[in-house]
Image 1 (cartoon, one colour):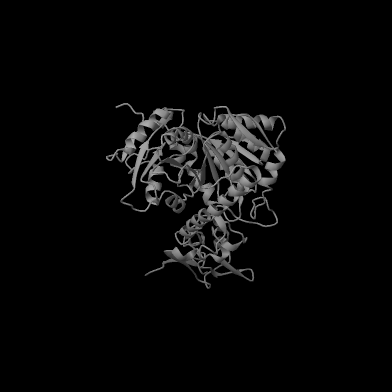
Image 2 (cartoon, rainbow over the protein chains, first blue to last red; image 1 turned 135 degrees about the horizontal axis):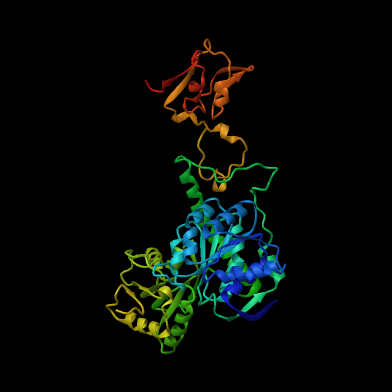
Amino acid sequence: MQKFDAFTGNLAIATAWKQINPDVCAAYPITPSTEVVMLYSDFVANGEVDTEMVTVESEHSAMSACIGASLAGGRVVTATSSAGLAYMWEMLSVASGLRTTIVLACVNRALSAPLNIHCDHSDAMGAKDTGWIQIFSENAQEAYDNMIQAFRIAEHSDVRLPVMVCNDGFIISHSFEKMQYIDDEEVRAFVGEYNTKHSLFDFNKAEAFGAMVLPNYYIEFKRQQREAMEKSKNVILEVGREFGEKFGRNYGFFEEYLLDDAEIVFVVMSSAAGTVKHVVNELRKNGNKVGILKPRVFRPFPADEIALSLKDAKVVCVLDRAETFGGEGGPLFLEIKSALKNNENQKVVNRIFGLGQRDFLPQHVFELFQELKAKDTKKFGYINVRE
Amino acid sequence: MSLKGWKEMTEGGIIDVPGSSEEYHTGSWRSFRPVWHADRCIQCYRCFSFCPDNSILIKDGKVAGINYDYCKGCGICAHECPKKANAIEMEPERK
């Protein structure tokens, strides 16, 4: 049974948490993710959930507390943005290396300097190689659905990795949208009980966590993490399929939007995909063969599946909401470029857009489309930047 | 102790067997070794009391030698051994 109501992305996440009732939430406020924990602490204060709220003095401490709670066998959540995620960076690798199952709501915001509280993906992209599963949402509905699925993925015995659910700051986090939410009981039944094989609190079985390893063992543990990431692919698909069967909204690695016969394809993640979809609809009316591939899962990166999906495209334009400053392109471009086989008949270009939440409007996509049709399309560029 | 492959290891480096550090011989990187002379030992147990590991062997209630599997050659036992007895001397591992 599902009902409609008006939700912001932050409320969607806090609502999913309330329905799941995790054991521990340790978090430190930072715009635009503050409201997730603010709303959730209301649920705690009102006795609607029995989560242990741990108010800490920094994001580094927040993630540290989450790690301890997760190793103790708890179901653990936190939320952060921008500098907060950057400050967690050291502990992000500890969380994944110790194979915790923490679920983090990353409300995407630009990194300083200059200080900017608005949306881009530089925070999440800075954490892309820390061993976390990363799932990106296009709107509040996806933020909610992805959050519910994240627990199943993280806690699966083949995976046991922390999951980051990324939602665009302000654009998703603070905008009200019509959203369909699921009954509490059905959410709980879908997510299930969390039972861990190892727990700090299992006093009948003494175990040590976080021991040091020397060069004769470290690389084996990293190899294990890669395996877990590989195995998570099937789990992500399984969970997405089951979610679709039960609740009517299917999820895979990426969304293919009017891609079958598309010659010009935009690859774009998160909320900006909505803008591009609108323009693609308009362009299609005039017979233009355009489509969109919207990656949902960035880690693990579904390279083979994307390569297959894009094999017939003549022009692939990857839109990045983060920079690599000196890399060949943005982080999404580098993954896509690496996934695609070298094909003389296929042009792969990159555009950086929306840093610090610079407007990305339909007119920019129309202009971009004209550029992409031209034979001498430049390989790299910025959208809506003043010269 | 043979080294395990990544498929055989516990996830995330969890040590699920209590006391298994005994299997890990930590004395391999010693550059000096304590040599115990039974004939000079006065059984004062100072070496045993001060050893930061557990490398002084006790047999039937008496100091009986050094466990080189775990001794890292810190020299505390030799330092604490009463000078008049001088029952423990440090020697380079490679002369």
